Length: 242
Ligand code: FPP
View (cartoon, rainbow, N blue to C red):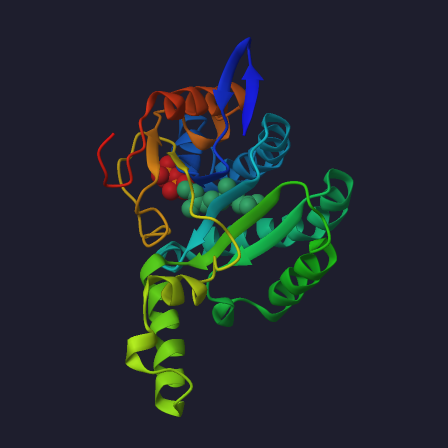
């Protein structure tokens, strides 16, 4: 879809994925604990959901906690989980106000039971909304997602429901956590790091990447507009020639 942004007609990416990096450094610069940065980061997530919707983005997928983030200190992991608890609780009300459908991707088996219950409630209660599709990657790792998909397919082959010849890219995509969503058109990573960090490694095969030095708690609508302008300057060829 197209939209006029600051007087310029631009193609709006249907699906934007974000690696929200730099919360720790943002807090350190202020001589504050890391969780202060995560709290500020969570506030920015709320605002960016509204901004993304207003700009015409249909899908927004954010990396909140990776399968590797358990290696952080107990204090930090507990802080992030508590932040997510509070976020999920408030999110039910906000989603109904903003017509936002919320999903969570990642391996739920390692999450606390009350968090899993909140996620299930949030997904069920917002499934009817057709505004922004907001997805939170939680205990998510791209390799782990592929491992779970392979395991799932292997079980079906073993039971005879599938044969090895049935395994094509479409089938693999249909067993991923993102099965109901289009692949991202644009990936944004904040804080100057140029890595994928195990995020959506299958889905990002043809995605345009936008890196900015801005730390996540400082990210705002102007940054999002810059990323969309950059996206419009790219020519997507999907491996072909134009
Ligand atoms: C990366 O910054 C950020 C995270 C690992 C956590 C992201 C979590 C939030 C923004 C809050 C909760 C999310 C939602 C959806 C409410 P970092 O800690 O790696 O920063 P650093 O690289 O500066 O240390």
